[in-house]
Length: 320
Image 1 (cartoon, rainbow, N blue to C red):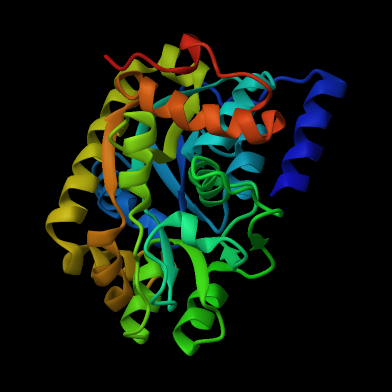
Image 2 (cartoon, helix red, strand yellow):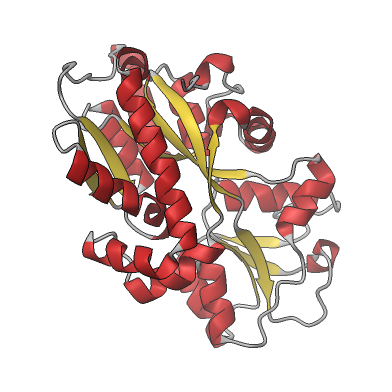
């Protein structure tokens, strides 16, 4: 993802192109990520595909880098991105704006070591971390630093395994310490009763920063669309908000729908994943302090990961 972003941002800077835009009467095209994070959009996909097929269409993508690529080449008008990726695109001159936070903190520290009661106890340990230079990585580094522990010096971070592999390693006992997002953390917990979560990272974040949570996922759209078609943006936002509410209220029904929409998650897994995935819908303009708090952590460890600066107020769309 990091190499992909560097190539695209460099391309933008060198040739000074603008994002490709759709014609005014074209349907609004929205990407939905396959996997657990896409489950929150299942009801939105069904509703708008049925009620407004000429105004909205949806495509599923397998990763955030594909969302970036499709935003840049004009294939989509809106999609969900990691907070830092959206900020980096904006700071590179890509004309997008943040509409809403659609997923809050869901990163867990897991271990089979009964001696661990606090982050300060991980000194000298090898920790498998999901997503190098992503939210789990920098969140964990930041919280450990508050205890005086520096990655690579006081503990050994390992990044060479994907989420499912880390979960499987924990479950089998091959991995003793890990940092994982949901639902992979719970999947590991369900398979091995000796796995514990002795440290609540959200509580640690709250204690250190004073913010009640940290955002994970941001729904963003092309600025030109937001300005030229506020009515369509309003419909899209209302539908997404309702979709998240229904997913939370009816995990089983959402699971069946997601499976029928080929969102890459079985109905059984989706039913378990939804209650622990911390789906929310908070208008981005109302979540600025929480967003900036997390982006400040990225800025501390790797300024390039957000484009060098905290985005200005213009980054946040004002939804009517």
